Each structure stands twice: as C-alpha cells, then as structure tokens.
Image (cartoon, rainbow, N blue to C red; front, side):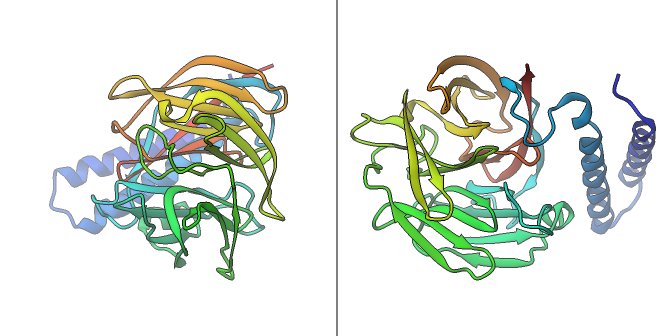
Length: 322
C-alpha cells in the first residue's frame, strides 16, 4: 500500500474537526465558528487530495494510459460565489496552463440565462474561493453560453453577433475574436441552450467542440492554435450533439456524456484525435443534481469541474494504466 506517516496525521486532524463540529451543534455558536470550521475542512480535503494522487493516479501530464477507467463520486464544494439560487448556469475551475505564481488560481462566473453573460471572478487560491474573496472581477464583451475555460492567463468563450471564439487576456482585459464559419447555432447539448462553442483543454492543448450543418449536427472537435486563435485541425465524429449532455477532452481524446437517469450520467463515447479511433464506453458517474450546464477536465490536477445547478462540483478522473 502507498501509505506514509502523513495519513495518520490527517486522520487525527479529521477527528479533531469532527469533535469541533459536535461541540458547535450542542452549544450556542456564532456564524463565524461554522465558517472557520468549513475552511478547515476544505484545507484538510486539499491535503488528503495531495496525498492520494501518487498512490492511485498518474502524474500530471502523463498520457501513458488507455483512457478513462472511472470517475470518482462528486465532491460538492459549495454554492456559487454570488450565493445566488437563480444562477443555475455558470462555470468554474482552474487555469489549465497557468503562468508562474498562478497555479492555485480559480475562476467562476454564474448567471440566470445562457444567452448573456455576467461578471466573472478570479480567486488566488482554494481558500479565497471558499471565502468568496476575489482579487479581480470583470465582464466580457458579446458573452454568450457558459462554456468558458481559462488557459495561459486567458479566458476563452463563445461570443455572439456573429457566432465566434472570444479570447480575453486576464491581465489587460484586451479581447480578440475569430469566426468559425461552419459552426452552427442550431445545435446545443441536451441540458442547455446556446452552448454552440464548447472550449476544452487537456495535455495536448486547446480545443473547441461544436456542430455544423455540413456534419448534420454531429460533434466536431477542432484543435486551436493559441497564438493565432485559429483552428489548425478538425475531426468529425459520429455522435449527434443534441444527444449529448456535455463533452470534454483528456490526452487528445474527446469524451462525450449522456444522461442515464436523474442521478447518473455516463461517458458513453470516445474519439481519439491522433488515431481517429471511436469507442463506445460505459463509464457512469453520479450527479449532485439532475441537470448541469458545465463540465470540463483540467490536466494540471486530472479533475473534472462541473457547474451543477448553482453549485461547484468536482470529480477525480482515474485512467487505465498501460
């Protein structure tokens, strides 16, 4: 077993936190007491996650595997940074290729409709995310959908009039755009409207997932040249976008999800962009709530980030080692 002395320390720390929780429940308490306890639990969870990956997961950036083996149970972090029950659509996660000093940064944006954006917030680390204490707040021009990601200190997003890729530098907030002429506004995922350009990032680079009239609504995955904001290669799949709940990239492979029931989705399809090989899969994962609007993989920590009806949710991804 992959065990060291730290695990015993962490378990003792967990026992202490549990005793504190019991004490608060049996006595008069201040709201601040629970807030501080929640932060301590979050910090301990991060420590445990740092301990577990060397034992059970591949190292970051390692693609020596045959694909996704399983998805962990959902980790429900908390309700969104605006504490709004109406912000059922949104995005959150980390920079997939962070600049030095920004490895721990998180982003979040929430909104009540998919046809316009709202403000986005940046947090320096996990604790600041939990405390909802952002260091930058900004809005995006022509913002639509909720398929945003952050990569290399830039946010990529879907812009409207016309439908196009948007990229904003998170330091200068300067934007640039590029139209994908074949991308159609008729096709979106089954859970959500207006999600026509779905951005994804993995160990191989930056991608955009969409459908076109020429593909008859089937998913297309395009590799983006980050320097010129242009698509340098395209792959057409056999899966209709409207039959999918979402999609993401990991190690150059497109993974597509669909609903099984109210509590379960599954990864049912994979497309390898290097070999053009297609596979039918059955990798189920549990949902916190029925419908979610955002799902993306981050190669820096091998996690899936989901925005689920206003809540931050994450999953650990386990790969099938060669």
